[in-house]
Length: 324
Image (cartoon, rainbow, N blue to C red):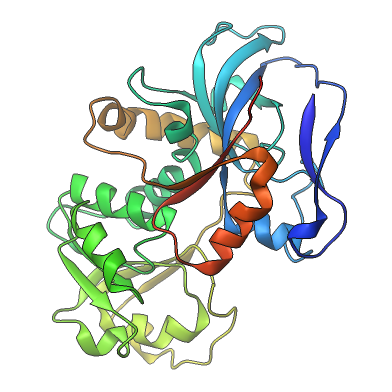
């Protein structure tokens, strides 16, 4: 089979393709023929040598999410049959023609959904669901602030926020992205190219989904309502900050960090079960939709990385295998 690998740490020039033996499924594992895979910032950081894969996952093969068809199964697999259309989230290795995954970590792809669209679902929607519904306990009528609302996680979070009955506010440095997010249900857009988001906020918010990190921390704490929850899922603008702890104590705030990649198989399976019960029906009936920015053939993965680096995209970038 073919797989993408990084021939060292560096720029897009280290992205290469190689032939390797196909992996063999073990107990409770499913082997999936990958048709499409999502591109994530974790891939770029791994390529640069700044985000190594967790133990047990390929050290040099990128890819955290995929869609495709079940090809074969190991002993004792009961949930899936060859030919089933599936999608999933892994700790690495998804940008290969074949990938192994525990049967309990797979999700079915709706019949009406293209596999390229399905590849945009696992990382964005599972991350947003876990952050908002599981960890932040977002309730109907609460106010939700989503930073970088045009990102893959951002576009998923807008829809999940509206599905939960929240009032959704989003930030972006691009007015066009805010306008497009309105079509997904965004109630208020804040253009951060003209100033600090905290100065434009009309009311406090109950939950913040933050991918910005340190530089935004003080303003996040300032705009949170009493007993508000700040969910940190990234640090695009910096890993550290010096802030007063007083607002956290005075307003009884919660600051919660979360990451998907390093979770155990058991944790992933538990999240997939909760997601399947609470969210999958809305993907099947069209209330929730994956938002694709661009589709590239796997041979143009370097261009996909450059597109993500440019920050011009809205939604997810997906790469596809040709000639399967």
